[in-house]
Image (cartoon, rainbow, N blue to C red; front, side):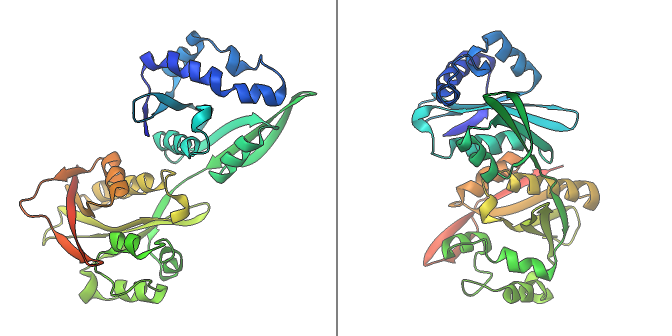
Length: 317
């Protein structure tokens, strides 16, 4: 599956999918005149011009899902989250919701659905949305309005953060993708992590940052100067709460860190290394703007009895 911004030429197919996807909603309310089934192509084109419409495509390029949103008065209004009936319950709706949020980082998000649409409400709640009001439309219809406020911030790492961070790698494979050979054994404890960061000899002058929002600690990374000068900073130990992956937190955290490095540290370049088998992280770094740098010899590590090669990436001011 691939999620990208829709083009105007896609709108007819998206509207056809909308008519198909909303049949189940019409059946729930016993009303086949609900607005999504009466919307015209002209109306969709006006929404296209006003905001963003995303499409999810399968391996053959067929549109299997879509979502749209626009920003107004400090809030992002999300609507028409649709998935082909044959592709539902595969995580596509959640992925689309995360993707549209990522287009409007660090905002207040609002959406609504009918009170009888319990599956929709459950999906939104799993994605961090909370009901803030219910409006009665008529005797047979109530709209449930949900919102999510995600204001992500970075602050200096605290020793108490380690209690959360050490739980985010669920197996040793993921742990080594994150830490390479920096720790002797898996799992590690909060004390192990703090001991590593507390050792100037080991950490080579690292300074660590923690990302947090209204839910608490959600991400972590480190920075260091890899050379004698101060023109370059190197990111490392980038990780996001395992329960929040796929929701745009990684991209938002890295974007904040990049902004901090360029605007406050005044570096000219940011670099990092990522294992070539960590495709999710690679995609995230590319989405932030990092480019792959070709090297004559790849840096490699012996992890779990295998040789893992690193991909060098950088972003310039």
